[in-house]
Length: 178
Image (cartoon, rainbow, N blue to C red; front, side, top):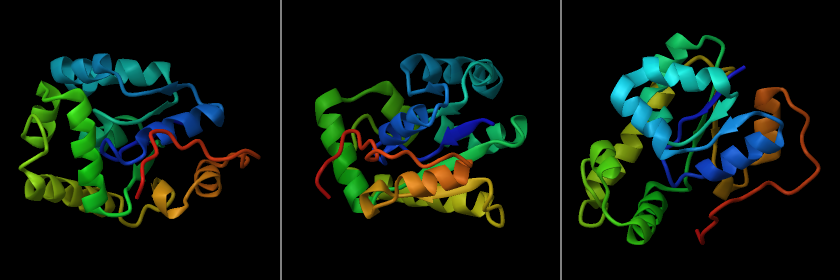
């Protein structure tokens, strides 16, 4: 089974990756290298990465979930969400203050930094969530939506993946105030 986290960045993707690793999946976290493979070779190039690991999160997977679903039948998809689009936007802005403008952000969101482009970013987030929901409509065995900030955790994730629920706190990474 292959598992793809398809929430955009700053939605708890690192927490998802850590949880998948703790559940015993051979996990591939976000890396610039994987994104570059996507830029240079598209989904066919990514399939080489998919062969080597069980689970994935962050970029480029939210951009290619449809193609991956077709290319890798039987996969599971997890849409990580924030409590609200506004909280997501604030987190994205805070993150960009640490990392500065970059090409990848420009390619994905259309802007090197989110500041001064709130409406466009909120629209991107909302459209992504709506597109994922529409694509997987009627396929509850293939898509799980989770929001760590609303209390989702081990029970939802383990049930969806058919795993035993760990007897330890859920691994929240990069947790910020809601």
